[in-house]
View 1 (cartoon, rainbow over the protein chains, first blue to last red):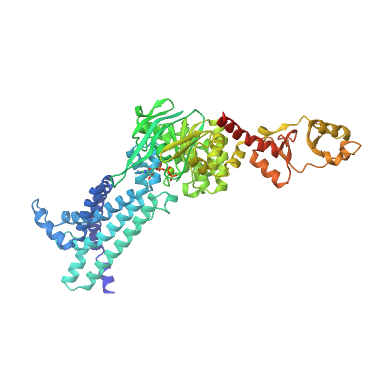
View 2: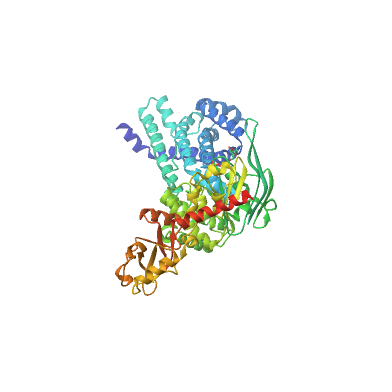
Length: 221
Length: 379
Ligand SMILES: Nc1ncnc2c1ncn2[C@@H]1O[C@H](COP(=O)(O)OP(=O)(O)OP(=O)(O)O)[C@@H](O)[C@H]1O
Ligand SMILES: [Mg+2]
């Protein structure tokens, strides 16, 4: 009850921090798509490169977020950005690489060899094959990777408040330091709602991007 | 025209060995003919076929397609000028049937409306209603329908040459026969030059103008289906074709090939005595009775009318069965066995009596080739 009162009295603040939170996640994921998808496609050309890249991405994702933020402070301090928005975005960007690169890579390498052969036999160049066949078929799986990245990073971004990036994590950290369950619950609730809402939105988007009748084969993970 | 000269392919295996998948294969498919590449699994059929459109780079030898040396053509351009059908059909699930069919025309930069019109025409050609199927996705089609689309996709840009790797392999036998017939009908008009991989002897016999039999990468025999069945060049080929290969030849021959003349005939109002004399003179045991305009109506058996008098009409029996002159001998023989008869009257599409076939004439025809071979061997 008290929490509801708190929420109703602080709608502006909640809105502001939600926007902050979302902007970190979506800017970072946007950049992660722009970098991860091409990397995922490129490494399909070379097995060894694929192994190395996927290994590095897997290691990054195991670094605890607090440790990653801590590592970035001295590095980014060199350009005067040790705390705040930039390190938060970079962290999310790095964490998103594994699901996005891996799903892109798997989706492209798993395109039915018969389809690849048909495309070649009909006279498509490698680029045309990628654009007309492999990428369209990979989209649902890539989108599934993006969904994983978004949901995971909405949680991680809540921690970014400790390096002064703001966002919904601020409610949680203040709630803890001030022993104020209202703030704590508000923060936790909003983070969960945001994760669920984003997941549904991206699922809807994924379906929109998949031709109606090929959706049956193109399941995500 | 497709011409292969001493075409070879050596694959390197991961453990350092080599596989001779094609060994100096030379053959020529004349314009408008179907050549079936036949042989047991792993004999190099697919490898040979894929070297023609460069999907597998050749190790040595020459390939000419439609008069041009393929070494002088850019592989992508080459593939767009050759129709290609694969066993797994390979329709793109992210594209409509229309877009699937239009792939090569689109790649060639045809005007969009012209390509789409072509897609509709082609669907019509294989009895798929364009208004229903153009906008569907491959998943919404049955296997047989997908296979048909796979074939017309290869025909979309009207290439003179077609490569087909077990194109009807993925469908059930009944549907396969239907599609084979449809395809042969289309081919009669289109007159494409076709290399067709199969491991099904019956399919090869049915489709081929020429059959190329492979074994371990080598071309063992290259001849017409009838020739192949009648004169297999080696024990391997003979056993590959099967011990019933002579029976298989029946489907290659037509009733008209062995039909005896139908000039000896009687009509209903003629005298039985005359019919009897005609039979004796011709040395026949039966004579067909025809109607006023020449349709086969019935017959007389010599033994039944030895003493008979009156007109033919008073004594004739109905024909147990007749066979169309255009039917193949396999059908004819099966009909004979079913009706337990040693001869049949042959009629045209309108039922007019053309002649008759006998079991003796059929076995004589089949045996003729073997007697020739024997005679050659003896001289
Ligand atoms: N990429 C490859 N690397 C190594 N060996 C290969 C390769 N492709 C084919 N071969 C070998 O070449 C030989 C001929 O293969 P091919 O695929 O042409 O046979 P096929 O006659 O089409 O057989 P099937 O009827 O089973 O399709 C086989 O021994 C096969 O193992
Ligand atoms: Mg094969």
